[in-house]
Length: 377
Image: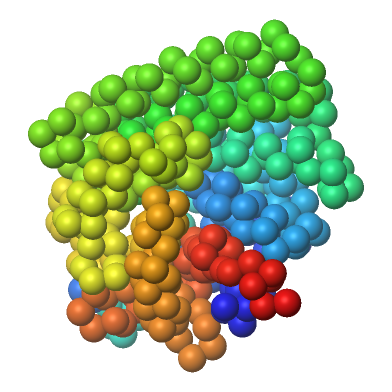
């Protein structure tokens, strides 16, 4: 899969704004998630939910220059937030106001209006952003290859983000999928808040700050226990999308990826099975089960399929994971690019293009599934 990884890496590089290190979510606006759906959004901005996956992908291919530039952008977000509210997305130059407007004089992609410029999501409260920042920024404290290692001063700034994560983890928000008319205590937001506290504890150990390590371990433990208790739905035998809820959501697959539970956990395996039963159409996985602001999503969300692949590999179903990964590679266009969504019936790509989330998914899953060099050399 080297060719696929190289193409994805080139695409990531071309999505960088070199002046700030920002990486945009996609190069287009208003390509609909499905035909006639009106789910047409402007993705030419920088989403913090991408941070963990972008850093992991860049690290895995040793693209250190791009990774260090991106970490610089994350650091600037942290410093500007001063421990307060962090937006889900910013402009490439850290612009905060991204007012959304519809351009009625434009017909839209394949005449699927509307065409939007700007993105209202900058006004949302999405509490997963704090964990994504810490997950991404943690690399700077541990990686000896970097020219600019993070230290005590940067840790102090990052602790302010962690305090915000702890404050907000059990408050209702729009969730990582940016629901515009529904607010819940989303499992994914609480999970990322747990990850923020967990990684801060590990950074504190690295910096030999025993008291701070104990502080963050305690907070992580508190959040983790609540997630494992309140997100579990006994009736459906699965972790649900929200505390006390029953609806399914692909984002709970990240519980293993960020380290909250082990892949051998019986409840996690049951969750994988439930998501496969209710959210999958063949190889493709949709984001969630419940109707949203626009009804039920018609297309599968590519990054969720990559999360599925990763989860299957982790629980020991590598052959199934490989089959699905090959199906995703076959869904790319003639130059190896993926959009945000795939129609499970037609196989057509929909959504903005090329999608950073999707290209990062290719890299991370290829690394997860690839055979060791020792098997061929």
